[in-house]
Image 1 (cartoon, rainbow, N blue to C red):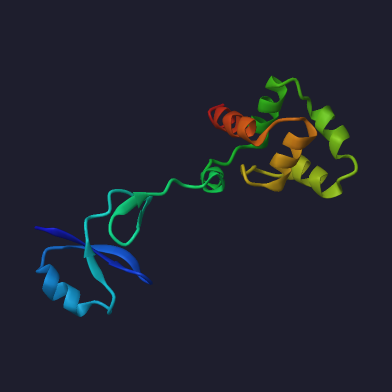
Image 2: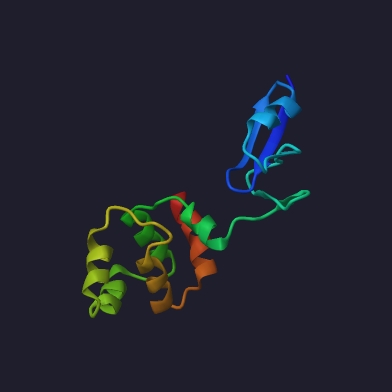
Length: 137
């Protein structure tokens, strides 16, 4: 079976298995074109070739696994940051304190995470590395 790729500016990319591409093309919406098979998820059709479009930093962070409060606290402890240190920094932030004390999991993109980073002078890139380490605990 022959695979054929198609692209439409509004509908995006799809591919078919088998069939005459010219006959299939006639059945698709106007503006659809035959394209080479898409080489991977991180590619965009530029009108004449597929170009690599790496995921954004935010998309990569969104895809990071959730971690438990235990994993977060052990990671902070590895940096010399104790639970009482966090409590003292969050004393004037009731919402942050509730999140810190009672969340059942943490996502890398939750505002509290970058907020703690700022409070303890940990960069977003350092948090990313620590997050991967924490997920393995």
